[in-house]
Image (cartoon, rainbow, N blue to C red; front, side, top):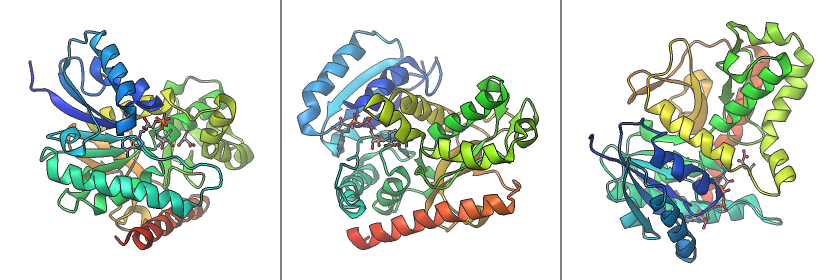
Length: 329
Ligand SMILES: NC(=O)C1=CN([C@@H]2O[C@H](COP(=O)(O)OP(=O)(O)OC[C@H]3O[C@@H](n4cnc5c(N)ncnc54)[C@H](O)[C@@H]3O)[C@@H](O)[C@H]2O)C=CC1
Ligand SMILES: O=C([O-])CC(=O)C(=O)O
């Protein structure tokens, strides 16, 4: 048997955590021959609930699961972990200002960044799901300066999946026939789901859809507002689909990407496609060997796309500047 990969999940007693940890234990992140250890982290008042999650994990008798730690202590939770999946955060409540949210989450992600830097394994990779995920990732990264910039990720795979399904549904094909939709920018309502670089059964998606008005005025807002639509329908935010997208992201970053394809994930910008250096922004990415990734360069950016990409990246720059000011980073 290989040596176990150690995965920490924060917010593990929450809804996304409950949909995610069983799949990690089953082997969905790294394959059916790769053992895992799970460090489940939540706040102290959630420890009883977390213990219940552990009981259910025990009751699955997963062959690949070698150890479970349940804790609210960050030193214990991030000790020697190879992956830190940061799900727990404070969602915005009615009447709350964005600056209030930044203050609370800033405190959470500053503390977690510091603890990861101090206690995690030398090869740790950090993947942020908790919202606002791009800026939370940026905040944690500021607090862990010794961890290289290419180890930090924020989730936009759920947006990519949503966009893929919308294109498939519109054109009467299956989701698997749609490739290379790119999500640019922030996981927020300014994100830009780009169909111009996508294909449907190998043909340009724009030609197959053949409806510019739908692409620009229906498809884009549907994807941008899908999170809110799920909340309105379910009375709670997306959980199973978010967990699925989180699993797919870590898998995609750990496995060679199929030839000619790419996927979307928030990464630290190096100025690619004119994005502001240093922010965590969603870009098209490939993984070649299951360990190193790179941004796919040379995609076609038309005038319409340029304006949308610039707008969402401006929002990210504003968010990181506010975080800098509020948190004194
Ligand atoms: N990036 C994306 O595409 C998506 C992100 N999300 C975000 O994921 C986050 C989690 O969502 P749910 O699981 O549905 O929420 P939830 O409220 O069910 O669970 C959150 C869990 O985090 C815990 N928590 C709070 N503060 C913590 C801290 N400082 N350390 C550790 N744990 C802490 C809570 O006790 C709770 O168990 C939210 O911020 C949500 O907005 C949700 C869907 C998609
Ligand atoms: O909108 C929300 O609060 C949850 C979320 O990020 C999503 O479903 O995309």
